[in-house]
Length: 248
Image (cartoon, rainbow, N blue to C red; front, side, top):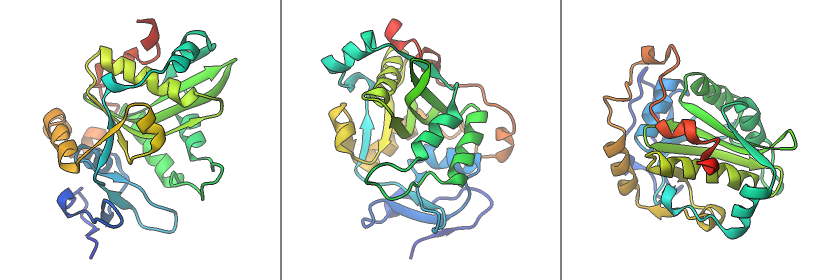
């Protein structure tokens, strides 16, 4: 039986208990409050559910990750970075990015980024935990991505592109900034051929969680709700370099 989370504090079961089918389903219930979400991500767990379901928590295996040094900057993308007329910003249009990521996509049924999820991640953004990377062309927002930055890890959530390669440009800036300034890993959650083509690989769940235990010690990310009542000082020095990563 799937564990139901009803404690006022985040008490997740061991990720070793996650189901094989569906892959990684761990528990249901709980909250989307900042202290629940931060504790979940630190443990290799993330929420993913539909409007007609309770909050569902997942920790799949294998886990898709992208090491910044292994990002594949192909010649065509490098050319667009240099000459495509794109500009990149950080945290200037978080709400627009998450809304664009939530929009229905051709051939896909609905979206898992529902109103409650958008509200929860906008709260994390206001606290300095969730961030967006925006790509502009001719004064218009044409692509981007968002996720959580915790220490040397970026937990990617979703990306969108309204023009060819726009989301790749956002990811290229993220990987480059992390490579230059101490970032270790981009969590991509689930395998996709698109991410694999950009250099992402899969590791066992245990390996991924070992990375998190090494880089995100519990005493750095407090589990008490009171710590999330005001913006948190960013602990990821590579963030400031994202927008100008390819001018470094």
